[in-house]
Image (cartoon, rainbow over all chains, first blue to last red):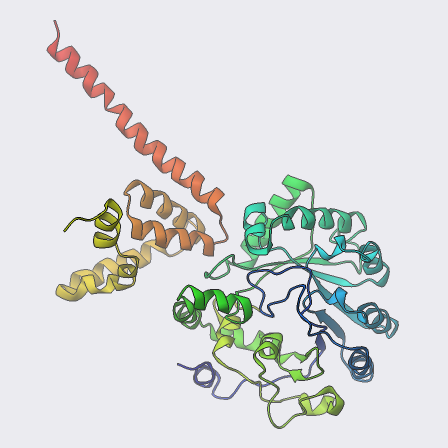
Length: 311
Length: 119
């Protein structure tokens, strides 16, 4: 059954957005890493990157509308030359900023002061760490990733991140290292906390467990190994209608690196823009028009509604 | 026709895709198969033991009975419960050690036999 039909049978109406509190902005697909599960197929050679003019438009839309949080993602969002401007201006406007960071970017040239910048700006960090063991992390994200991630987490802890200090939350993101579903978030969070504390004295705030979306590089892997249909069946059979109220697309507006508007980052990669009755580009953005809009869905959306959900 | 060992034992007899056809086992006696499935499903539901504990038992048993289908299925279940090869390996050692102990304890049978058959 198609996802749209599944939603109709569960809710008796299409999936619709509520008032958006979060403006999620993808600053581009350029990244210092090339993780096997990356839904944007990010990497050092990617050229899609948000230009200054678009970044300034994003900022205007953000501060001129009742968004509470600016959620910056990529690629590695820090590689965009407008990244620090966006963070600083959003914070100056008194809003929250979330940065989705890969933990290894801190070792790149010109990023030596990144951790202190984050601390000074009180940026909420959401960091990718697909597992607490070295083999598992390096297999998905590349050799040496785990050691760098560990060193960054220690540094962030030393600056107060993830230690209970107000304004310095540090959350980690688990994702399966293959074509299986994520375990229960709460159980794994307890284990992550125990293992990282006992092994390295590392603390963090929350763990989020996400399913791998059948999009981008992970979809390439599924197709290459003839497992795409099987994985889609697995996601569909794990459909949980209780997750529909909490899926992130209902609470965010997503801006692509080129200024186009989407319901989520996955739709962005697939080129599935917002529904036809609302603007498709930030140049025509209208906050009120986005409330109650019909969410653009396709079968990849099963990834956000499988089991406990992934938003 | 000659087969290599791998062709003979893995390709001919054990096919990964057969795991998805487990339901076919019920074709010739659906009532009994349904009883089995109901029992199997109920056994794996979380109770006093968590799902995680149950799939760890499953992966240990799967290795001891050397069932490739079960090993595949329960390894995936372990991964979906957030476990790694570290957890799986520990469980397999527990199961294998019990299996090893079960063999060793039978040495006493040999001792007894020696006693019975000796002057």
